[in-house]
Length: 472
Image 1 (cartoon, rainbow, N blue to C red):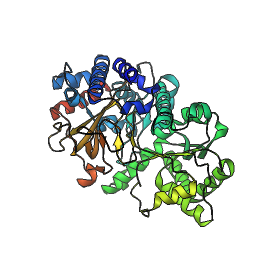
Image 2 (spheres, rainbow, N blue to C red):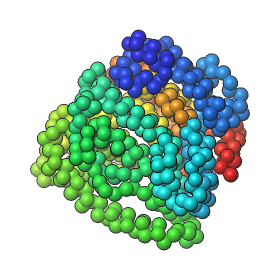
Image 3 (cartoon, one colour):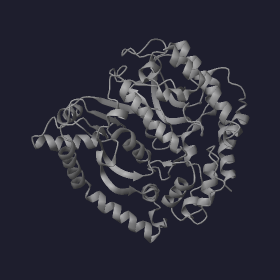
Image 4 (cartoon, rainbow, N blue to C red):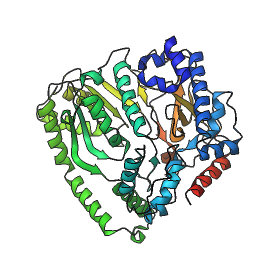
């Protein structure tokens, strides 16, 4: 344990190769020391290299970090990753979008010439080819995509980190060693694309499956288009505002959308065929399945009606997150899924695509922050930091200490209640955690989430304006 403590004091990145369980055996004082040292290290390294962070720190008067909460005024609103003008996409000004993104990463983008690019997919492909970045985008359901500048090395580290978590979450060496055993990987989604789940696929195949032949995807040849994701969000947003008729969309993009809609119309049958292939190819084996509960329940429900059960080995694992996606499922949906799949080794996470670290759910139903993820609670009305004591409710903000090329301090849109400060979780793990009753402020406020960050709100506005000016 002292070895991990000393390693984390030197650099939070040392958690990548550690026994994941040991991170929840640190004492409260050790955890404080590790996080304070990590905050100082990341802030000291990144402030001189990220002009937007330097601007915000100057506006907020933050020069020295003497306590963990001193960094709270430098948490970015999650909207910063979509703070570019929408005209950059509508007018294909990807040269300006590149300059905007360059303000959020230490990776040098000055030599990237995006002036001839006419699509988001083309822009992302260009960055893939000419830089160390693998930029991921959000779902764009609000009408605008977020772009997160994670590097190729960080995506690989993310999968390595997940592998160690799977190995040690329930205790040292309690799970599979996928780096050496190479289990089949089953994903009911796209093989390629630019969202976070697809960005990790190459490394998951390399590190978990061992080869393409040992992995199965719903759409192995298809790529989920960022342009289509953007268009879908814009259409939804325009329809909600009653402005659908004024939205101008190219014929090429509309044709791509029609193709996607045709694929979606076949999705039910495609999923059934996919799941049949999964059973035929990997039935009875140890497998790694990554999927959301809703898809898995539909599979299990249909399979159970066909008399199928226990289709994979009992040592298999399911990695999931995101809850029920707003869909109605029976109360026993988990039992139906587990009975059909034939195993009950479930790893469920709470995560956000802007950060590398995730919070895993324990047997008590609580989501635990690893030591490299520093949580904050903010008052939703004032943005002030709330006390670090049990059963306090507020807006969650987090600083991920693992990214060292972008500032991973984020104010989320989630209302949570935290604990783990006054006493450990009943599962025995130490450190802060949140209860499994997470809600979105946008839903509570009728679709509009007014984010108030810590410190002076106008300082964040000026920092965002400064970021926009960098792209001009």
